[in-house]
Each structure stands twice: as C-alpha cells, then as structure tokens.
Image 1 (cartoon, rainbow over the protein chains, first blue to last red):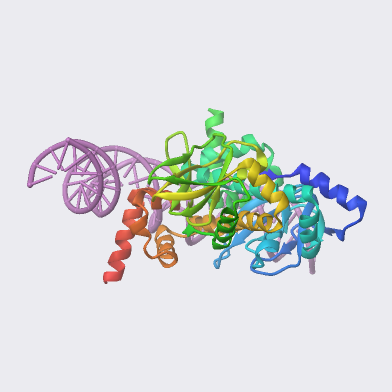
Image 2: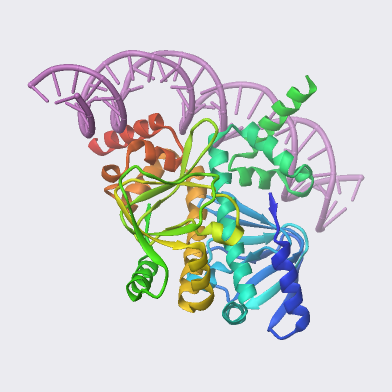
Length: 190
Length: 190
DNA sequence: TTATTGTTGGGACAAATGTCCTTTTTTAAG
DNA sequence: CTTAAAAAAGGACATTTGTCCCAACAATAA
C-alpha cells in the first residue's frame, strides 16, 4: 500500500554523499502541498524519509489517490521525459525529507550513469506493474475483500492514513468504507 | 483508447532495416494468445501493424483490459527490468505483425543506444501517465459519461472492438454497457 | 474554558450496477 | 441454404454503493 524502493534510495544516498552532482535535500512539514496538478516544475524528488500521497482531483474536488509514496519513491520524474504538465498533485502525510534533482541533473545522470539509468527504468516499470492488478482487483471484488487484502498487506494502515485517504485510494466514499469496516468487524466478532 | 507510439515505431523500423541487431518480425492471426499471464518469456514485442489487447484475468475468469495496443506499442518489456512473471496476457484482436527483441538484444540496445533508451523510458512514462487519469475517471463518473468520453476519443470504437472487450476495459458488465448505450441513444433521439 | 473545525460512525433512502435469464441478431461452418 | 454457435440486447429482480443527513468525539485556536 505504501510503496518503497530501497535500491534506488541507497543509490541516491550514495550519489548525495559523493557530492559530484547538484543534488539537494528539502524538508516539508506534514500536509504540505509539494506539487500541484497540471503545473510545470523543474525538479524531480526522491523521498528520503516520510510518507506522501500522490493523487488526481477532478472538477468536483474528488480526490483519487494513485499511490502512497514511501522511502525511495520518486515523483515529478515523468515530466522529464514528456515535457507535459503534472497529472498528479503530491502532498506530504507525515513530515518529509526528500532529495531534489533539477531536470538537467536528472537527465545527465540518466545519460552518464548506467546504473542510475537502470534503476529509474526499473522504478517506472514497477509503477506500471503495481498499478495494473490493483485497479483490476478493485473493480472485480466487493469493497470488503479489498479491505481484507489491504489489512494483510499493511495491517497498521488505519493508524497512519486517514479514513478519507483510504477511501480515496480504494475509490469509494467514506460512507462505504465505514459500512464495510463495520460489517467486517461483526463477522469477526461472530 | 487504442494507444500508439509513432516515434518508437519509426525508430524500430530504422533499426530493423539497418539489420545490425537481432531483430525479427513475427506474424499472428486474430484472437491468438501471444503471452500468458504469470509466465516467463525471453522476448519483447513491438507492434508494427494491427491491434492487441493486454489484460489481467482473475480466478473467476473475469478479464480486466489494461490497454488496447496499436502501432508502436511494446509489451513484455517490463519483465526485462524486474525478472518477474508477466502480469498481463496479450491477445491479438486483428491479425498482427510485430517486431521481436530478445531480452539480451533489448538490454544491449538500452545500454548502447541513447536514443533508444530515451524512447523506451518515455514509453514507460507514458503508460503511467495514461493509466492514472483513466482509472480515476472511471471511478468518479457514471458509466454514461465514460462512454461519451470514449466516443469522443475514438468514435469508431464499437466497430473494431467487441462489446465484451469494451465492457472489460471500462470495468463493467456487458449488461451495464448495453443499458448505458441504450439510454444514450434515447437521449440523442429525443 | 469555549467555540470551532475536522474526523469518524452511522441511519434512511435513492440510484447505479450486477446477476440471471431469455430473446434476437449476426457470424461461421457444413 | 441451413444449422449451429457466438455476440448483442434487454427484462426482472437483488445487491451494492452513493447521497444526504446528523450525532459523537477529538483536536485546535481564541
């Protein structure tokens, strides 16, 4: 549920400590908006510590959460390749520390550092791999099954993430989430 | 709805005609299963001509279509980076011609050909960009709106793709699709 | 402390969607 | 041309989920 990428994390740490590259660390408080949707930025971020959410919102203000980002996850990287506007907003859930690359620096690293290139490529591939079954599962099964699945994957999810965010992640209303949670508890009690 | 990638297509064409690389062309009839889910293959395909569907199916046999692949779209490339099993099955809808790269060849191209590397990277990024709003939209809006949207994007979609596939793409049953289509027509007639 | 706002939990009803079948239409095969 | 098989359309009903509320309970600021 909260995705991480230890390998990329470790490599970024190494790059940072070597200091050859124009790599910075930025800090954010919790609930801070780091990126807006449909905007243009010149930076790629890589989370060093903390949790953020990456989400799309529509005209009616409904949010749909794409991913919860943990250590080693990047965001803002898609815009390096296509020069389009951001599709997601990113907001910190906990206080955050993140590395930031300028687009230029990120591009140069991709070109000159084969290992970095491969790690970023793999990170992209993983994002795709991860999304596919998630959405199909959410459609195909009732809400209850989805919650059971989340609980197995990430037992403490209700403590870290608000009900609203969880609902927006599954793509349902909080009302439906509560209903499902209640029915689940009743089943367990019986 | 049916995705394409002309840039990558053109570049593959060029690579193929130069003949420096171990690149082959394969042909498939319509409704042929090219890749199974949860299997391992040693090849990456790039569609040269025709349309295929890429889908996940669950234990109950329900299919959920991830993408309709047209010219210039790759599949089987994710497994080059992570050495895991396929998450999707791929089946041709129309007769198909496709380039095939061995994993080895694909990897070497990535390492030695900067332009190829960048094109593949961009293709991955586009797959992510494309998926995000699609799923959020499908959740947030009623079926009818989704169909109107598809019609705008791809007016002739009912002629090429079966109702069942369209329903599996939107993540609904054929019954619901028919109901929505009927109501739409009635609204237009009035 | 006292408002104030935000989060959570849930009742009642409406609307959307799925399930199960049957009928009609189209396509393919003999 | 006829028949079998597959795809499309839709009726009737059940179920799920959403909408619109309101109440309880924090957490926060004044």
